[in-house]
Length: 124
Image (cartoon, rainbow, N blue to C red; front, side, top):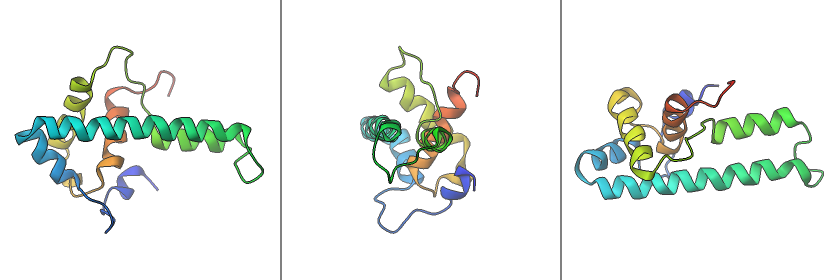
């Protein structure tokens, strides 16, 4: 299943859709930046936890391919070392601008898609 399929519907327990974030991009840039910072930091944390599973207990995936797949789903992007919050917000807002059909979806899924499109990892 592609990431786009997951973005098709916002779960009932989600606070915001892409439409909400897009509105912030247009009218409340500080709110958009704050949300983007949270998404970025959460993805970094999730990636660290997923990567750490390589060395833990019996219930964790032993297959590096499984771990790599999970990492790709969470952070399939490689932001430049000097990228700042404004740039990451610009990338996400531009993605929302250019993807109106997806905006009713879950922002966390679209965020990864946006950054992967803007900053794909070398060799991927």
